[in-house]
Length: 287
Ligand SMILES: C[S@@+](CC[C@H](N)C(=O)[O-])C[C@H]1O[C@@H](n2cnc3c(N)ncnc32)[C@H](O)[C@@H]1O
Image (cartoon, rainbow, N blue to C red; front, side, top):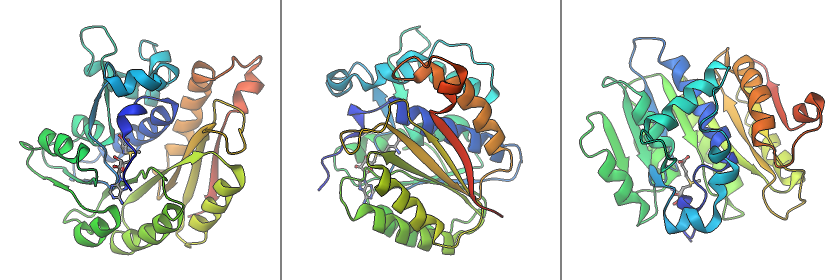
């Protein structure tokens, strides 16, 4: 079953959190001259028109990137993320939003490798076309978890692996933990970033406990919920679990979320303390 299309959701509050974390990790890895490999297991279409029928139908981006794309950020990670969005929108209208592989393409150098897997028969060719002329890219129309076996480890032994499934199937949580374990066994030097939705609190905590249960060291939880828990009736927020994070990531994210949370909040927080309740950055497993 592949009914999920990211074009309905591109640029929403969950994308803002995910891509802010992605940009901050890549920026850190780019400080060294040594080449890196970016592997995107659920890549989507790569670039989204916010004027499309799908984006306009849900208008989710209006509660996400629409609230902050012209904001002059003080924190360096938020400023870097917003500068990438502005690069794609030079005419002064918010017309396009980049997906995770496009963000990687905008940031990485010629010596770096981009690998991506995407199963959807309509989104895959759109993604593939964008990388047709890039050397050191490998874009495959195969299952994410088969991709870990076929494409990891890469030649370059440093990088970022992003896991961003749609969680349409109940089995996805279990499949992800098994897939992550396999990927980590093959490529333990990488940083892993796993996106998860906050829909039902107990299910979120069980999923996180399962990832902690893999025994992989150094796990950081970054979560942002602009809405109160809805007990299964829609997404109140989302999170990123980052394994082997850059040592600067927790501090960077606390700084960025302090600034971001009130801007994106579903209801205006009355006080700075209320705004702080919307997010958490917690070390789950030490080094
Ligand atoms: C949330 S979207 C990805 C968004 C993208 N990572 C971004 O941030 O721009 C999830 C994508 O995973 C794809 N997908 C679903 N199951 C998959 C699987 N088993 N293997 C590879 N791709 C899959 C869907 O078609 C969809 O495009």
